[in-house]
Length: 149
Image (tube, rainbow, N blue to C red):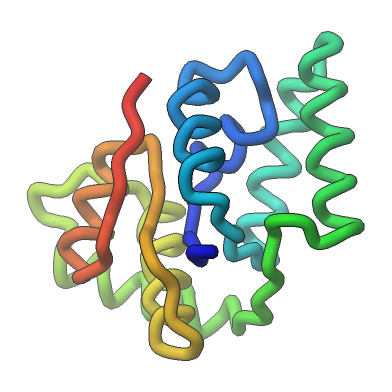
C-alpha cells in the first residue's frame, strides 16, 4: 500500500463526487489503494474547502465521508509537523525556485511538508491537480503525479 502526499485538490476530489478530478483520482485510488498523509494545515484547508462546497447532497456526503475517514483513520495517516518550521522551509523553497514558477504560498507549504515527511518517514509520490504545484514539487525533487480532468 503506497503512502501518498496528496494536496487539497486531490483529497477534495477523492471525497467530493462532483469535482472535475473525481473520476481520475478515484481510478488512481482504486488501482493503487494508497494511504494519504494528513497533517494540521492540510486538514484545515480540506475541511474549509468541503465546508464551502457543502451546498447539496453531494457536498453533505463528502463532508460526512471526510469526518468518517478522520475518525477511523481510514486512508488518512496523521503526521505531526511543526508548522512554524515548515513555513520557514517553504519560504526558503520559494526564494530558490519562485522565479518562473506560478506556485502560490500554500503550494510551497505543501511541498515543504512533503519534503519533511520524505526525510522523516518516506512516501511514494506527491499527487496534485495543480500544474504550478506539480512543477514546484518536481523542482524540489519529489516524484510527482499531476491529475488532469
